[in-house]
Length: 134
Image (cartoon, rainbow, N blue to C red; front, side):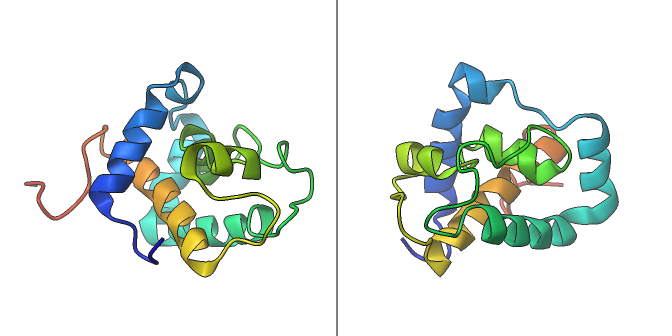
């Protein structure tokens, strides 16, 4: 895995995950959406990096499987929507094995997945990127 995931590959994986009924129900609403709007993408990315570092990077995260709330921060909602909420989901959906610390590249990959989902939510589901006309 490289430190910068291929956007098309990531989009395909996120699309496959979004077809799962449990994952498909997650949307940024209310305070979580307001937080994303108020803080902006750069701050949310920093929050994602920090939250992932504390809650997923360790080989055996505290309360693994129950460590990610369903709301309270846009990153938490995005983690459930992208199946990056616990080490079990990371293994099942992203092929990142449990029982060892995440590599820097894996950490960056998870942050990218979370931020890409948030950006799509904030733009009404449109794929972000330079090819989009604004």
